[in-house]
Image 1 (cartoon, rainbow, N blue to C red):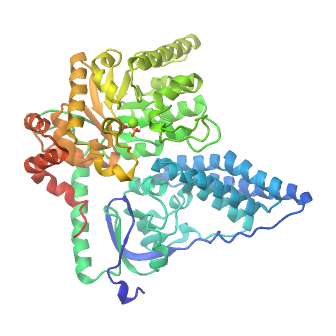
Image 2: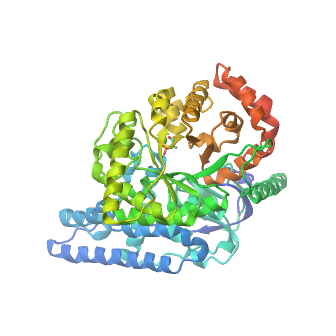
Image 3: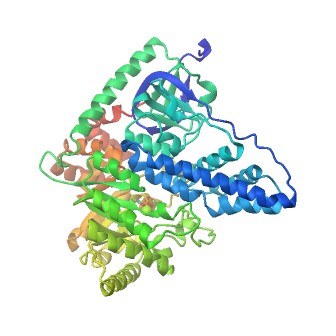
Length: 593
Ligand code: PEP
Ligand code: MG
């Protein structure tokens, strides 16, 4: 039991999946694989050691394959992650790297694998983008399976947990997470992992509260401890007293009622009190998020970030692999629109199979459309896959980081060439495929009237537009306070883009993170955007709030907001005019004081 000095002790982690769970902890202890011993081998043992390693990899592949075959329905959509783990088993750095260690250092396979994994982790640690940095955990999960086979260790099975409780583990791999008996799990708590780890993605899609990345949860919590998990704030409270328990029971009720009420109506149209309709779509990075897009009532996919299939792997994806992926997304979405953004790699986005040079200033370097135009073969392959998939659903294509009209012209020329070759080959595709440009660089804002003549729609990427306009690195925590979506400069820029789009009679959408924050909604509504695209889980809350706002009032409100000299003044004005509407929304995420 927890000793009395730890009554109400709060462990702070990352709020990875919202919701509150109160219950007994179940500590899922995994084997400690850190005590791997180095053994020098004779030159004539090298061949045997390599075979042992290859055999262990093959066993791991079979194990993952069996899990995929036997996945219960609710996890089927996540099979994709396990497929990527099968591919990772043959990753150049992991697979060839281990064999090289055995050959060159004459060491046992376990040690060679350990060194290869350490090297990969060191490389990943340097990646600024959180999402890609966290992919190091995939390498660790995959290597753990190989280690177990090499050592002949029989790891405890998560599927054997037969008590209903809150699972506390050092780390959970996708293979483990997908074998959990769902009806037995109230929440997840882990030492490692973050917002974009696969455990977090799976937990969110299953709507199980999760707090990850606590660091020392498995050392502080014991099986049968009573704990509270608040997946909305990232707090885990040990041995709560009566008062805290009562507070959290109330909070749990409120959260569940609010969540149920907004989710129940999330399939209704996003229509204001005075009858103005907005399209509310979802941003996704992974195929497995499509289920959550539909569950949360999205009108479509406003941004499919396609980098994932290029990341963390030794070879580039084939046209067939891309085509199958896009086609499946489009087919599941049916008549709903799917906007596929072409590869936005470079900058803070990393891909091991691509020939990216080191750059002093990567955010201003060879990224996105610039990289693609300089690598026409990679670009053509993706465009062919998108065009072919367009025969199977309501697909649109969108080019990222356009900073001058020539880029759009070149990208469209390439698109035409690919279309002509598909026609020659008799391969069907949508001939009137809509083409869009992301507006995320100040020059594109200024030239929006010219760019508008070249495309069918704009999508404003405020994550980058803020970075490039306010000169604030989007991932630098030292200047995070200056990264202000409601900066008056941003409002004026968005307004300018919307005006240019309206003038040219094309659609204009906004797909940066700011779209999913309820506090920004009155301003975005007043800006007269046609659609907003956001993280799927934000959709029910945004739609719910939108249905309480008046479009005509928001336009008047915007005129006032545009007169404000500072972000603080804009925020004050929002609070003054809309504070009441936000009370219920913000409660769900507000920490207990
Ligand atoms: C953006 O820049 O706002 C955007 C949506 O794209 P990403 O975050 O992928 O750069
Ligand atoms: Mg961007």
